[in-house]
Image (cartoon, rainbow, N blue to C red; front, side):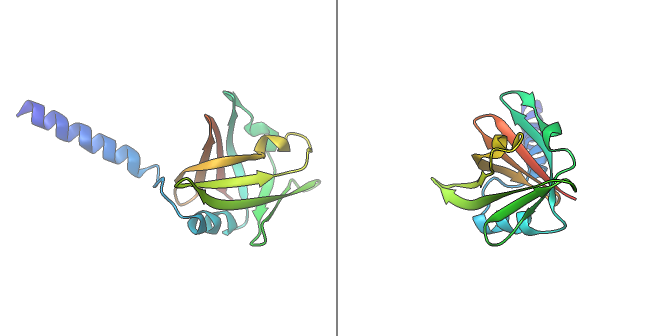
Length: 135
């Protein structure tokens, strides 16, 4: 009986942890809808090779457009780039391309979708993490 209770308890903990993460199998259209919604997105986390580089983008608001362009503005400077959301080998990816301005080349990558919830979307690339949050 104790063993059975232990298994049930572990299963409940595993399920509750996963429900907070959202689903890792989202269509490109649902990812695009998140990126296009609201008043823009901010980078709430950028981990690059174990270093937290979120501060590089503090104050920037990212606006994604349906035509595949993305602009990042901090009020005094705007950096324009491109993006696409697509399915590759069964995984949904976000690819971004910015000019070499400041640290924006850190975002130039194919980011694999990890999770989504009401306000946050998270991507990964070989251990690097990119997280956008709605404003």
